[in-house]
Length: 489
Image (cartoon, rainbow, N blue to C red):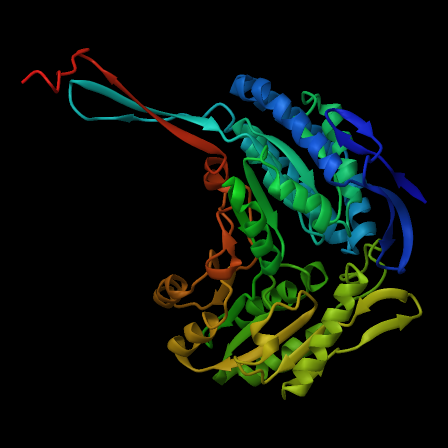
């Protein structure tokens, strides 16, 4: 069994003070595969103290020097892609072919944000010739980064890269279900030569370590990716310190296929996006809206293609889909299969847990498709976070938009049409932070990503993510040195 039994705090590998050691479960077998350190509130206190001590030096490090360290880290990251991808797959069950592709792109994110490290400039504000007004930007301070279990390394990259480029320091708390790859990442951070305390990694339970990080008065900002109810708890617990928050939360993305679309390409995207990450993605195209004139054709072809999805041990590169990441998620996914059937949706593929043979006691679910789903059904309204697609018919643009916007979420959306006017009309009516037209899941370091409505606050990636790590100072300097005596008459 592999051991990751130390926390990374202040540039040192330390045993937990009030946490402990836990076993991490391999979801492909349901059995332990690693022993992992978990921190508690005292460990969080130590990590925040280290980050605060490091902040004064890091914020004053010239931007080009911070950039050089970030670039060195990016190259070390590139050298360790296979190791990091394999550990993430073992910890959360994501197919290795996906993990390699995802993790292999992270170094470019680090390079892109490194290019911004010396560009945190303010602006001059014209007024009149009696004053000179300008702004400067100062890094916020310590950022508490709380990452999810589905994409620990991607989320860590999205949170750490802009924060560090801006001059902030970080305490990273990965999800308790999948902590291993983040501790392995800390080893690469150590090799890159970041000053001690600039990055600290403390896995732990949300109710203990996470709550301590959120409430800590020494933390200036919490960046959280996860579930909406947890975000509400974080907001309540952090309100007393008036810290900043950014939230990347759930989604129930509509994937709209109009009759004039290139249906072959639309199906490629719709089936691929419905089952990516074992169905465990906020941007999952889980609601497939299809114009009625082509609906039966799409249902038939969608169902046929699902039969080609190879489910099995995630470290086998031949497999497309692995297990659910943990036992609770398996139970949740299977419960929604029952909900869909009870509410009258037509199950046309999957719907069962896969056991025996190569599946053993792993948390595998067959890719599942429901047809004839009504927009108000729970499987069309609630985020399942499993490999369950809901096919919904519509007639015309207005109904498509109404169904697309008819959930509390607004993270992502996709639409397929060869009518350029429709592409513009519909994309601008959809309440989502990112809309893909004739493509899907195009997410890059320079493209802002985040949600409307219940899907979050703020943005990750792009200049927007960088800008969220600063305070703005306005300075007004008199050019005359004169200030009238208000009591002279």
